[in-house]
Image: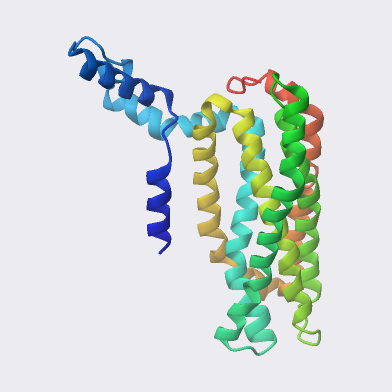
Length: 278
């Protein structure tokens, strides 16, 4: 069902990549005039396999390796992404083993994360997007500084850290299972808040190489998402749910200053960047 929806959406999307648009314009010109001299640069360019490899595979890592801002944001988003997958191992330890729920019912404990995620999207649509649109109108025709995109992370980052301490220290079997479950609502809101905010920040900062920056970010995030569940059981069994969640909470707490630092020093860092045009 999801595949069908995505295919329909993709078919409705219009291409906005300039080189491809020029190819279509050249083809149309040839059809209209019957003159074969009209060609776009993309059609006549000869690209070797080595150049193609560099452009497709190596370039994201080159951009990532030369951009301190992107490195920090990628680590932060990868940590958040990895922790989301880690919960697929941690929740059964708390709710199945600790509270005695069967695996089917234990799966329902993820529902608050979903509701929190929906709340995060709605918060972005209702509160933060209108603020951004207002800023666009105020500064037009000048662009809005990318740092304005970080507003939502200022709220979401501390909430994300809090959600781990909440989850960990209410995970005792003697405490109602609703207490650790409800931490998922805050966590879901924070995850979407961080991701929506930082994705937009990366796009606005690395305008001309945004796809490359996002590709590098996605590769590292996927690695974290694959690795984190591998040590989750050992971590929660060895430290106990309370301290295991606290360790994650302390890491998340250490990441709270990231948006503050970028708001303060972002313009300077962008001025020194090879890939940030603003």
